[in-house]
Length: 199
Image 1 (tube, rainbow, N blue to C red):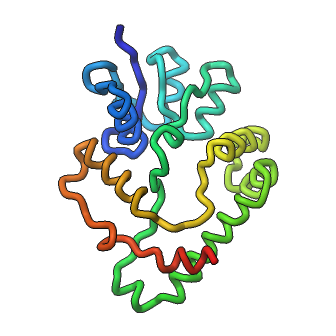
Image 2: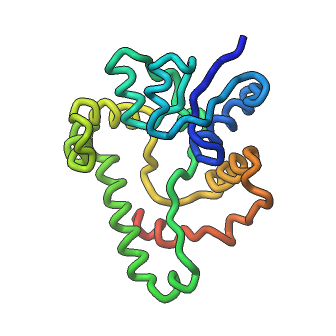
């Protein structure tokens, strides 16, 4: 039996994380499944609801929208099954960090303030605050999405990019064939600003 899956482009994080999880569970993405990566990123949910696949990998709000219209339901979260993947990271040249530590610290402090807000408020409160950024999505849907992320422990309480997460990211990139050579954690990551912001 072949399971058909609609997925986003090769080399994209959702696809790499998905294949990493499959392999971790003894499933060969190339042999055990048929993954269609030819569909435009914004059209995968429509392709799934139109019967072109048994499963689809979706970002929000598409996943919740599929549930709302009874076209499907969320069976798993890549974020839960993969572990703490550092999905968003900020980069700067060492020369910039050295020349502008106050700017970097203020930027990091502002991000930490947002993390603190998420930790100290309910999904309903968070949804109301972020709703203006998602004008195309109604408040009830945003609340559902935030509640799901909240229950899944999606958000860390701080911005410290730890070595375990860094190595997991490299494992995923290496597993997908996108990383040819691993890089030492201490050569690329500084946690100084995040540690100050967390206190």
